Image 1 (cartoon, one colour):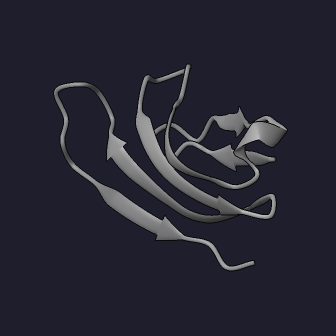
Image 2 (cartoon, helix red, strand yellow):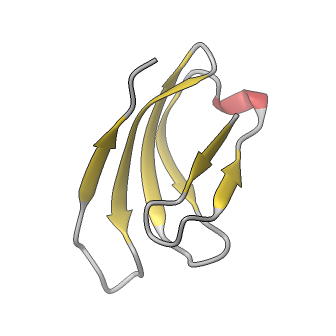
Image 3 (spheres, one colour):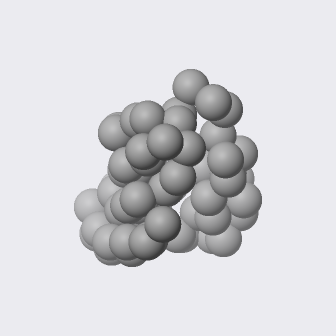
Length: 65
């Protein structure tokens, strides 16, 4: 499963361990923290938690299955 980083657009490849997951993942290109919700291998919600450790701005992007 893949998702695009909401900060830089980089494609983040998630292992099968993330098929049913709610929590944070980190973009290794720009270090942004994304909070995600996945169900049955599909991305349901992605929130940009922070672009950098100093940035607390958050954006929400919902995806329908």
